[in-house]
Amino acid sequence: MSRDKIDLDHMDITGVLPRPDVSSLTVSDDVIIVVNEAYGPKGDSLVGLSDVEFDGFPAVTLLVRAGDREEQVHLSPIHGDRRKKGMEDLPVGTKCELLCPVTKLPLPKVGHIDDTPAEYCAIYLTKKLEAGSMIYVSDTWGHHHSRIVDNFELISAWSAAEAEEGD
Image (cartoon, rainbow, N blue to C red; front, side):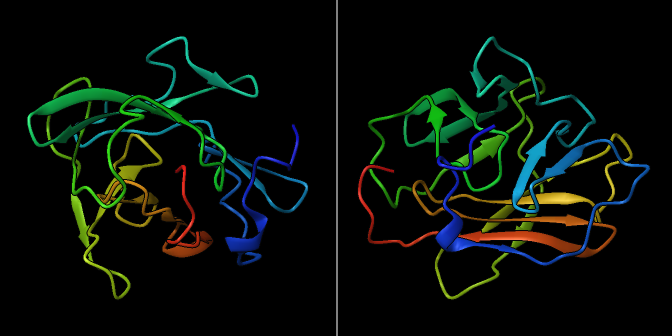
């Protein structure tokens, strides 16, 4: 897997490794974190729901509502990789509702973390739906800030530059 698609300038890997008994994350080359498992609010898998892949890894799929639109969006499972498929023409800064594509239930709100209007939603890393093992994703389109937490420890944080176009 190539590091060239990962926004390393805006990635902060804390050095804390995921628990060895949790197979939902793979860490390689000290900066590449791949989400192997991800779950919605009722425990439905969000990985591999479509044939969309990024560098051979199945996408993490969410259902996104923005205004009168609703569409599946397939995210790269590689943390720090901006690639996604779906809603490509949605304007940056649009507030979205993030839902499980299986149950259509909203992803749980985590709240605000930084000084932006973005609110974070939770994708669980295990079927146990543990609050301490989640991916925090922003509900604002093009706001490339996300975090991976395992066992209540920050594993990785990605805070991309807001001024960049083409996200």
